[in-house]
Image (tube, rainbow, N blue to C red; front, side, top):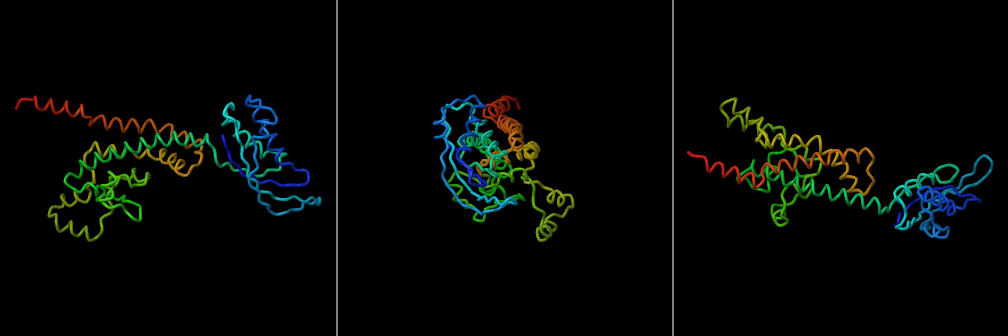
Length: 295
């Protein structure tokens, strides 16, 4: 398992930075019940990159050199609890009396595996969500072009070069594949009417009630579908925060991870319940009951 680090430290005549790193790693391994021969531990640390920074002299006249050092940690696969070893190792490197003032971790196969697991879960959620939204909007806009399901929505595709109908058709996609994740929670909201649209509505609707109904009309008017869309708002945010961490290959905070852990089963249940409502067996049973009902 290869882990890549960059550290900043102050080099003086007595500093043996490689030995400091090796000793710190040895302690972290032993604290987690990993016993390796000294020469094996030494081979786990490989110095990679070096940049020289500024020199500084303290009040006692001692001169130190700022060094930016990159190194690789190669942990054996048989390491006990490697995640704890790496975490404790990195934390201990910056503790006094070590001369290291800063550390950043980059390549991390443990994080990569965890992000891949979360990515697979979020892929399943988002695809199922797009499937549900497609069922809702195809029902709401029967007879309307199926690649313009967002025609009445305040939320529109954010990309500068929006996909054409032909491109979506060839990719077997629709507009929901091109929304930002954060936009899902704002669906079923029409933009504020422009003055020209308002005047046209006034001309088209003689009765005030009809005019008011048109102005207040939602893109999706089915009450159950509208309730589903509204119910997304308190669950999507936690999924989006984790999705952003995955997209940018960074470790989620404990708060983000906990929020995702709580929200993931809830939104999965919400989607499954919606799809179950319109499952083939339910629809066929309902149709059968309707056909058997005497006139």
